[in-house]
Image 1 (cartoon, rainbow, N blue to C red):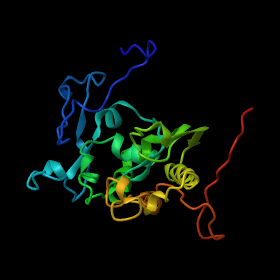
Image 2 (cartoon, rainbow, N blue to C red):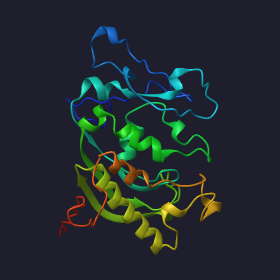
Image 3 (cartoon, rainbow, N blue to C red):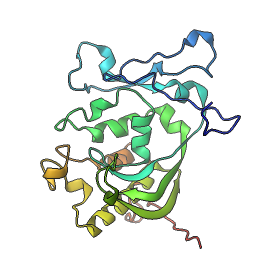
Image 4 (tube, rainbow, N blue to C red):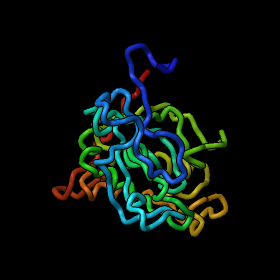
Length: 250
């Protein structure tokens, strides 16, 4: 038991060990039936995409799959996700949806394996829309006490963070991420930086960007797959709007 975890609370991880290819799935022997000891990924539950990471063998069927963690498929029935308010060099911003897509499956590096093959716009919505992930991720609690407006997800420079002093709660990952996107862009504007959707090695701020383009548009694309509500102000009768409520604490 990890020293930071109270007695009676279990903790584990999905990954078996670091692997540059990210396609190994098996941890402890599933045949024991003791799911408290099982780590790794579910061989029977995965997302298939015609998307291969740089340097992978296209003849290996494993490189087209992202398997869900056994913790997700066989040990729990509900998941509370804990994203953080921050920008991201490939996805534009990273919040609830990217936690769902990149935190619950293996073989995720293929979504942005080189600067000019960034396809987070495709990968994030497709993985997050897997029925198991959609059904089990029921609550999002975003840590917005301190935010990151540049250099995310690592935020290696303290000047790229700010005290935002807020927590966000949502059952809708799309709505949460659109709120976070607007907050990050507002802070970037305050700091004299371009919006996350316009930067990249082929766009603005090329000298400080790692990918050809950032792709925060994955948030709207996820809404088209029925993962949540994107719009703040929708024409009456056409679609629902985000209900964003702010509660000030003394």
